[in-house]
Image 1 (cartoon, rainbow, N blue to C red):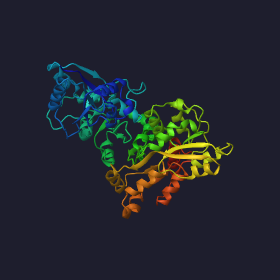
Image 2 (image 1 turned 90 degrees about the horizontal axis):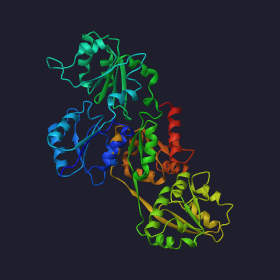
Image 3 (image 1 turned 180 degrees about the horizontal axis):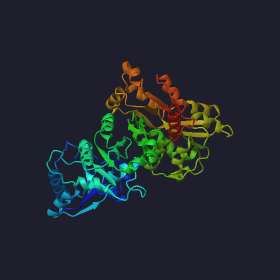
Image 4 (image 1 turned 90 degrees about the vertical axis):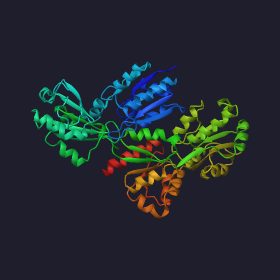
Length: 508
């Protein structure tokens, strides 16, 4: 029995522009057939057991022909699968969605169409170009830019386009730009008419080139623009000078490497991306459980005998509570216990388990929590310290000096993540990376180990370094890195703020 095929517009590139219904279709699909222009990040919503099939559809390089794609959709649906066909932009705006639907109808396959935000609208908007404006024009025309310039007769009424004015939007037309400009000018459009090309619109790689019909070809050539591009012709292009916003973001155009473990990287990536950066996720560490949970299990069983539990990181909270629940306990096991946390994010994660922290120092480092305990009578108090296996000894040593009995127990450990090191080294060789971020001493040491010793200085010569705080910065400097940015507030938002200030002050 066949299932339904959902023809889903993936939007123009910014994953935030995917519709809620489109996201639902990705989540429920057994099979996802996706195009080159459908952002890979959208596939994170797919089920782990979903079959992902790349259909290509890149200009001049189609992995599957349209006929093969049609047959694939029919075959997978006929096998009883729910299929989501993920297409860049909107399926019906020069997306050949109509041809796929006709094939499904002929085969008796049930389908739904989920519209997407078309790049024809989104790319100009992100470039600061409103397609209509009552002071300029009330009409907008969408035209394929893919038409073969060598054919004798065009299906496009170039005379009507030139005479009508308004805003003209050509999709997939960068290769045909000279032909498009020539035909418009030959049919009478003024050579001073403003024009713009927007490449990779709505993404952190967005690039916009403006000019007039008389200059745009040369401007594009100088800029080296290639597909995918949207071409906009009309007086509204002049509004970009004061309306551009997306490319004005403080970190726009910066390539920033995020080295923290992938499980913890999403928040940082989201913040940097919102600020305009292109984030390259190259996690150099992974957090995994300890080799032996015996001591942790014993501590959990004896939790009521402790006076304090101190959490030094989000990872510590996560791994501790995972093991707590695996042993059949929940937050009630903390009855009568007092807690302390390093950093508001750690405290927030603890609160998500129903427990408010009793001590939250002003500064987010181990030394600060020692100061916070100065007014607490610690003699004879039992303290449980669940944290990383490789953590510094400052905190337990100082607590013991105060008279406490400290059980320091590893609830997780960090190991090297070498999966993407080859790609990272190539990016460094090409001087394509502006900044590398370190959020812990372990990310520093593991990153250093992954780089060839004899090429370290050359690879790092053109790249800035940002550290989340003084301890991480000190570790980086001891490992030979020149630290350009160190956050005053030792959190991810604090690090992002420091990065923005650095680029604002340096003007680079």
